[in-house]
Amino acid sequence: LKDHLDDLTDLLATYLSAAQLSGEISDRFAPQDVAHYLFHSLYSLGTIASVYLDREQLVRVAAVALAVLEPQVQPTPYLL
Image (cartoon, rainbow, N blue to C red; front, side, top):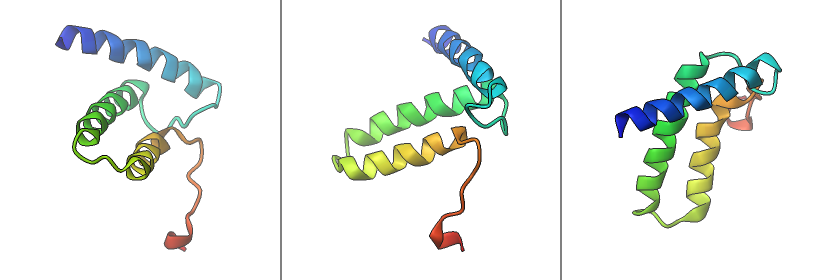
């Protein structure tokens, strides 16, 4: 299983690297690190989804996890 996950992470990192080079996503973090983070987040979200059935909450949590890909972090009202 670990080898399979490592292969998936490497594949995702390849696509993330290309997206970073084209400016589609942030280059603040190494593609391999982002790939690991996204897989960990996906696994965690899947686990939590089996316990918490509030779809709106899960969507908000997913948005936070995906924010790592944003080219620029936009200030939010609660931070101002």
